[in-house]
Length: 141
Image (cartoon, rainbow, N blue to C red; front, side, top):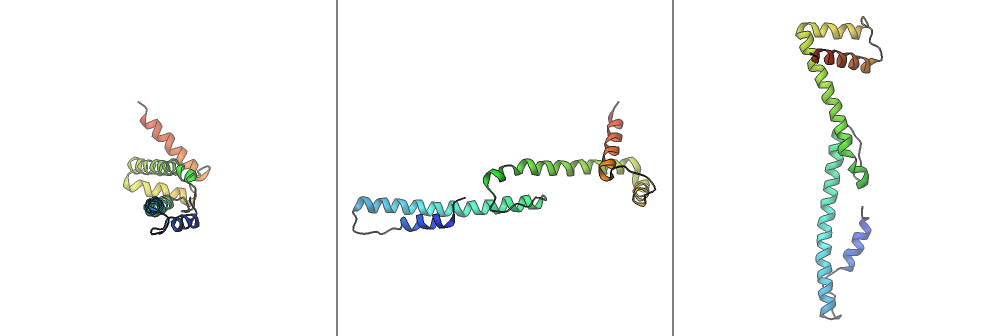
């Protein structure tokens, strides 16, 4: 990320209207001023994109500052994909439970687990493992 003071220094060096140094220098200054204008637009766009990336990652459960490096931000798609895949798998388990137990039996089964009437080893990972095994068994011909 380019430091704001570097951009400001470049802007000052590229000001239009430096008189008395000849047409070639004035033309070069005008070109530099145009470049400076484009740099300003690109810098603003960069900041807007960083904010979008940061807010998108935060919405997926990752705390990402707008000051993070591009290298760090480049890892976010895979990280967000991993989070989404976990959520997708949890949704599949939930749908499977609803279909397997029906509307009337599912609350009873969950209540028994929550009440401690049914022992589930390793908490959520144990429940997930048991559901995954049942889903796999059901899917086999």
